Image 1 (cartoon, rainbow, N blue to C red):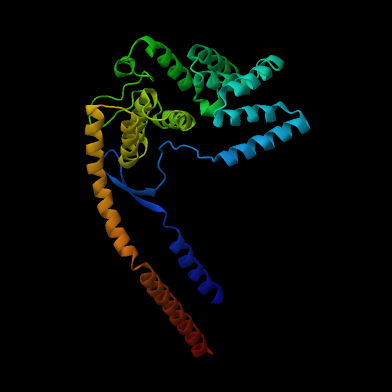
Image 2 (image 1 turned 120 degrees about the vertical axis):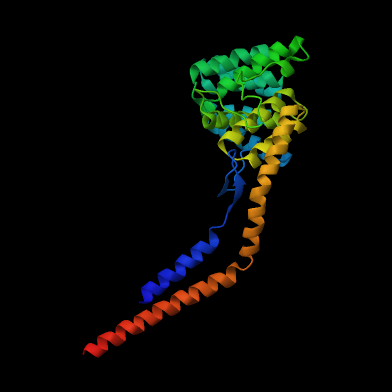
Length: 304
């Protein structure tokens, strides 16, 4: 009986802690109570002190071990610190000594892009793809498309208004549709990975980020929920994306999400009585269990 009552108490205690969800409206209009995670790119934030400490740590580790992995990571943090030319020399040195190493090829591609040399960047990103096509969640093909677009846009100011970087059309209706043969979930994950990597080095306005954030919004509408899609559309607008279709979708999705928000308000209002209802429920269960226990014991005694 004691174990039974303890089990009841624990089950109520754990249920009181598991409340990290909220109502979200899906693209089909239904409302789902789900995880609050939002698939929206975010920038990493380091202080100069943190970056300096990391550089010092990696430099010390490399001098002690001679491990080129430490040297490569040192170069990466030089990039994060804005020292692109210095980082390029390190990656070039590693590439000369260890040709065909994925890390140096990929890092050279990114560094050349940050230095404004998109042709060299495309060469090294293409080479890194040949070495390891599954790296970065198999998303580097998107990086290569971005570089192709940036090179094509060099002599065409309107390029990003007339061309799609991903070469994928999600339609012109209020509800985006993923073309046949494409996994919207996989594409969302790959695009999110690339945008999370890029957002630290691409302050707004930026036509590449702007267009790809719009596409991420379309994918999140299909895979996740309209609130996540709307958040990506808002970020796309901050980066300079202008589209009547995007505005119409965002307005529609915000309206759809209001249904979920209304349920959230009702849920939160009810949640205010949570401790009282939880305590009352536990008391009634314990009272019922105790009564059942006394009843069974009395029946047993009457038979003696």
